[in-house]
Length: 331
Image 1 (cartoon, rainbow, N blue to C red):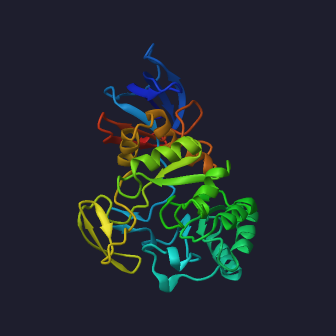
Image 2: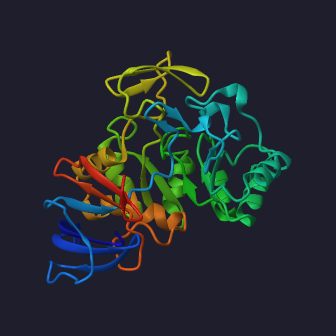
C-alpha cells in the first residue's frame, strides 16, 4: 500500500516542546506533516497508531564496529576506516601489529577498490606522511577524522587547517588536556568547523564532559556514536574482536589488561543517557540524527519534514524502540 497515515505520535519541536503530530507517508516519502488527523483520504490507505509515543528521525551511527554477533570486518564493504595510520602510543585496543605510518600509495589502492564507498577516515596526523594523506583525502571529498593520536595542540591545529574536520570518540585514544600542553582536544574545541564524536555510555565519558562538549560545540557540532563491537545486543560474555580476546562484564568490554574496548551501548540508550545528563531532548535528537546526516551529506535523512525519506524511530517513555521505519517500511 503506497499511502500510510501515522497518527498519535509526539514530535520534538524547535522550541523543545513535544507536540502531537500526524504524518502522511507515500512511497517512502513524508508527504504531509500536520498537528492532528483532520481528514482521511478517499483513496486506499493504511492507518497506523503511534500510541502517543515519541517519533524521531532515524538515528545515524557514524562509528560502529559490529552488533548482534556480527563484526563489520565480516563483510566486504565498509564506510568508516579507523586506521591503520594510528599512533601506537594512543592505540587503545587497536592491534599494534597492524598499525603503520600513512602510505599514500596504499590509500590510493584502497580508494580504487572501494569505488566511492569511503566516506570517513580516522588518522593520527602527526605521523610521517599524515599531512600528505590529509591533502589526498580532502581532494577526494572524504571526511578526515583525528584520533588514536598523540598530536600536540600545534600539530592538531595544522591538521584542522589542512582539512581535518572531525574527532573520533573525543577524549578517548588521544593526548589528554594539560594546562601547559592542551593537545588536540582543545585545538578541536577552538575550531568552529570541527565536529566531535561522543560515546555516551556512562563509561567512556563522564556526564560533566558530555555537557562541556555540548556547551562548547552545540548540537550541530557533536554526534552521538556507539563505537560498538559485536557484543552489542548479546550481553556479557567472551568475544574475539580486532584479534584480541575481549570480556564483556556488566555491559563493559575490556581486554585482559583492563583496556576499554569499544562499547555495547545502543543509539537509543545513548540518546536516553544524553538526556539524563541534562541536555535537552531536542539537542540530543539532533546529535543522534540531524547532525550526523548533515556531516555525511545525507540530505534526505535526519529530519522529520515533508519531502524527506520516512526513516523514523518510535520510542516509548523509557527510550525503548517500538519500531524502526526505513523508507516507509517497518523493519
